[in-house]
Image 1 (cartoon, rainbow, N blue to C red):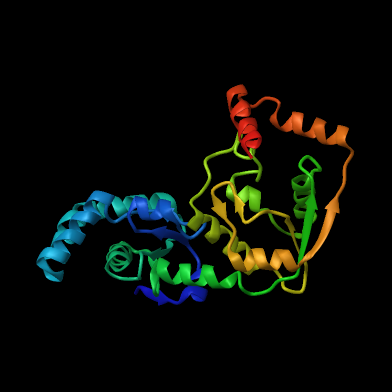
Image 2: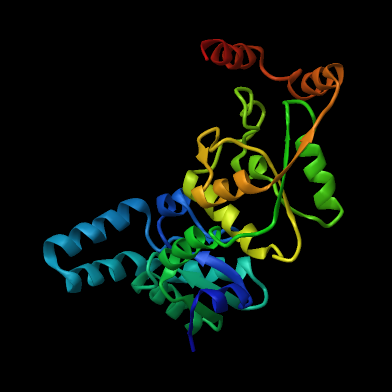
Amino acid sequence: MVQSLVLEEFFSAPGIILDVRSPSEYQQGHIPGSICFPLFTDTERSQVGTCYKQQGREEAVALGFAIAGPKFAQFIADAKRLTGDRYIRVHCWRGGMRSEAVAWVLNMAGFRVATLVGGYKAFRHWALNVVQTPKPLVVLGGMTGTGKTDILTVLAQQGSQVLDLEALASHRGSSYGALGLPAQPTNEQFENEIALRWAAFDPAQPAWIEAESRRIGQCRLPDALFNQMERATILEIVRPKAERISALIALYGTADREALVTATARIQKN
């Protein structure tokens, strides 16, 4: 029997999370830790959507099963490869036919399956609202090269609550911030990652965070979080200039020369 769970129950249920939306939907934003497990490719999803608009629901459902049906055996094989405990959580965009279809197939194959009521849309509503809940913050300020990120790393290793925004954004927050790092996530995914960590923080304990502008590269901080940061206690980290220069050389000294020139040119333009 497939269980239908609201978000809080879905989070606490056992099993991997399979996101059965199309690959481009997953890329735009997904529940952190979930696995892309598409019922349709982007092209197939477009075909079904066009059929729905032009011919109606019944024809679109028939087309959907015609496309997905031959994939069912592979879905089962892939699910077995991904998990050994037979517990699986499944969701689509709104908790509709895509997640229901995949859940039915996996349940018939012997998996214990739970679906998310409201789908990813329900998660996004939660993610956008959870950061509005106030939490006690301590903000680390200071000039570039003072080692604020290193301090956050040590605090996290010691068990403190840390929200490393630059790590989540894959950007160090300056003109040189993208050098040597993977591509940034979408802003939607950046918000999702923040929300999951924010919700896990104990409101009785401070959370440590680095001072940032509203944007870290192409990622924008949620307004509610930025406003809390502006009201929080700030600790300014001070370090001798020579030490800052050494730290920056160690960080960027091996970066691509042309990339360094381009990043420096951006500063000059400002």
